Picture 1 (spheres, rainbow, N blue to C red):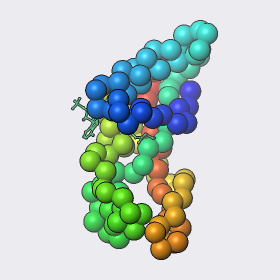
Picture 2 (tube, rainbow, N blue to C red; picture 1 turned 120 degrees about the vertical axis):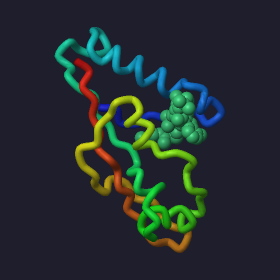
Picture 3 (cartoon, protein in one colour; picture 1 turned 30 degrees about the vertical axis):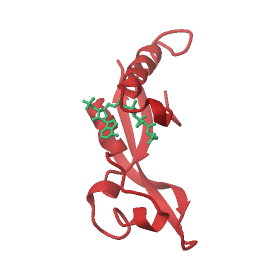
Picture 4 (cartoon, rainbow, N blue to C red; picture 1 turned 30 degrees about the horizontal axis):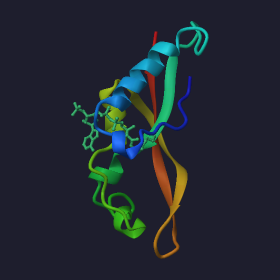
Length: 115
Ligand SMILES: CC(C)(COP(=O)(O)OP(=O)(O)OC[C@H]1O[C@@H](n2cnc3c(N)ncnc32)[C@H](O)[C@@H]1OP(=O)(O)O)[C@@H](O)C(=O)NCCC(=O)NCCS
């Protein structure tokens, strides 16, 4: 199974709902009717943690160029805490900086075995 988009509404973040929803999705992935007993793993992508920890202009340096604060935590690490393992990193999305420059965003491709 792949999870393509996963967001918690801002007012409801940091109450444990995201973690709970992911655990539910993992349980449903291996059961009919939403999932399948043949499902072996969940795959997803999350923004690379280098955008938090690497001081280079093309990593942590993108946030002021986008007019944004540096995020308070890394989504890649958030998934790591849930047991997801990164297997490659690649540019997947783009954002437009305040000066009009297009910035490619590198996503970590992650997966977790569910059975
Ligand atoms: C990432 C997201 C789905 C997490 O859902 P959530 O309900 O806010 O997260 P939870 O409350 O379940 O998170 C639990 C853990 O995440 C971390 N965490 C969550 N919010 C945090 C914050 N604002 N600052 C620091 N750590 C945070 C904590 O380590 C927490 O662990 P703890 O309870 O042991 O301290 C949600 O914040 C979100 O929608 N973010 C923006 C969109 C996004 O980046 N989506 C992913 C696209 S791939």
